[in-house]
Image 1: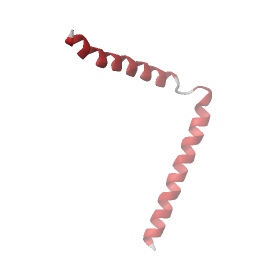
Image 2 (image 1 turned 30 degrees about the horizontal axis):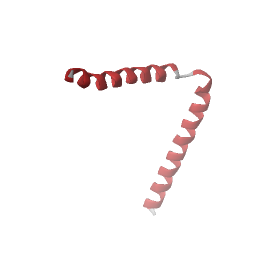
Image 3 (image 1 turned 90 degrees about the vertical axis):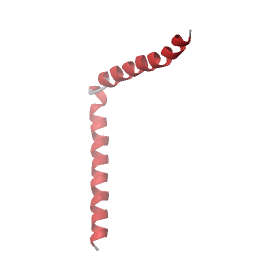
Image 4 (image 1 turned 45 degrees about the vertical axis):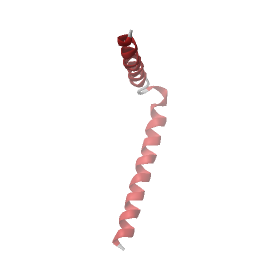
Length: 60
């Protein structure tokens, strides 16, 4: 019975991981895609602004 208790946790984790990947793939796009893209654009703009400010202060 030790082999059963050794195999159950990895099997359960593999099944949950598979369902997670399937859910991620299915959630790509759809009605929330524009909102997700807008959030990503805002994050990229904030990162670029912080980088420019950091570079400007290090040049001075």
